[in-house]
Length: 262
Ligand code: MLT
Image (tube, rainbow, N blue to C red; front, side, top):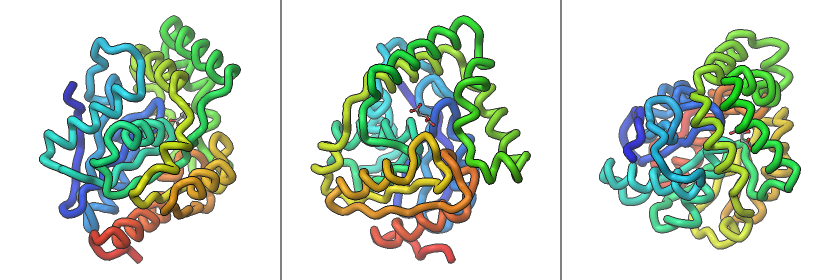
């Protein structure tokens, strides 16, 4: 499986993994804004954007192995790897399976806990519905939680763009990813065992993975720090890209990469 990947910039490699049900298109402002401090590598996870789904059973481990193979292909031994929401779950699977590839970890608007039973059955329902009825199901059931109230009230262009990204998700990939996320284990032990620095980022208006959930991850990691992004919801990287990029570039600078943006 070769992931379709967009990259920008030079220097310390920083891989960013996208949310559900989006694609690497969500990282446009990071490719533009972070290229002067690091090499931003943004793959489409399998099934989304330009990457094919393949024949494997749904699993975040499979997605994490795809990312490890991408690092091999790029000739990158160790990188900062981060992800937003579903991308964060894949990052935690990578921490479990390939800890030796990590210079640092970024976990944005995500959580380390596994799904309770009710959430798992909700995901199975979404998977069935999206296969039967198409992406309108995602627009109806997933889109409303993704954006914070500030974006919803004041930034129609951003809401419209996210809606377009959600509508572009292939139904088979969306169903596969829902089943992969439902099967994910708790990752707190993985975070406790990490010896790479961890940056946790959260939008202050994120209702899917609120600040307390982010704080618990930053506390669990032996070398964790938390950045709260004002006036952003669950898609903090899209809603407040400049604040998000400032947090990432300060982290990159801590790790010995380019100088932080002001
Ligand atoms: C995401 O934004 O990737 C989703 O909220 C992840 C999830 O459904 O848990």
